[in-house]
Length: 91
Image (cartoon, rainbow, N blue to C red; front, side, top):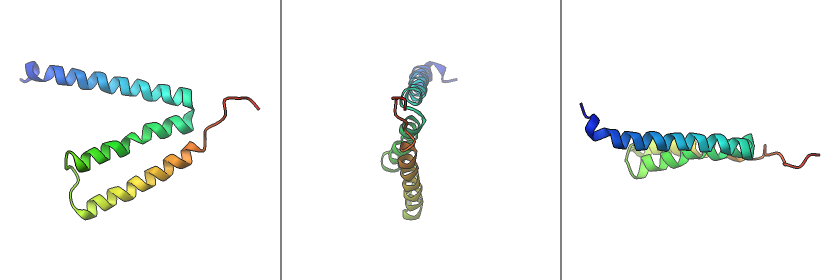
């Protein structure tokens, strides 16, 4: 079993994931659902770009084009969600 080798990277990944989850909850709480959720969802674009360019997980022109269409829909959705931001001042 590879516990002696993998415990440290696994622990670091778990702590990093937990910090990211806490940060996403706080961003939605303090920025509002429209802006905070938009910021959180933009992480999908960054991970997709890492998958295409660094890890080479997506190959082929047609597949990358499909991802690009999905990314454009995501960006459009982020922009539309960002308009839901409500002012902190009452009235």
